[in-house]
Image: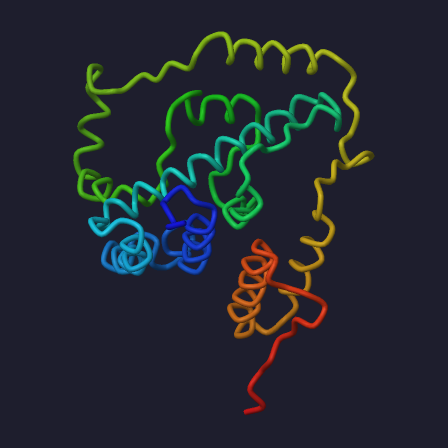
Length: 243
């Protein structure tokens, strides 16, 4: 059966390429604001996209990456809100997005501007709105000179409205929890599956030579990719060049 843009195989390949090109998603990357390098990174996807859609272009790639990231961020916000509401581990939101764990590299708590309060999480993006990658819209840099003038005009600012029922329900729940005695989360840390192993890997990578980190990331990504299709077994191993 021919692969399509919605097939698991295709999406996993897209995510794998996406992770290998941090200039498209890591705001601290030196090339994140470099339009030429970002366009080059987007063009690297064209061969893959044209294997399922001969008419695919750079805009097609942008829209697909934006859609994938938007879906991840929506699920991530639901998890964060459920944690901050203090509902207990049994009520923590479990992501329904099948590729959620594959995009864990996007959930960097050290990223500047990350939202960590209930109000910020609720107001950061209106419910029901599609989220676009911060660096995905190249027109942002072209219109930056007009932003100061536009912001001074009372008619130019956009006002987003989130659906009231969903927002109010969450706000009321958080308000009730805030009135109750606070139980330090540190006493009962909530562990999602594989958190401990992920932290172990992170610690190991912090202590290894910086030049080895990209190779290690590549091997881990390839192992996960192969495991998704049950291509690994007890004899699987890494073979390196002695030179």
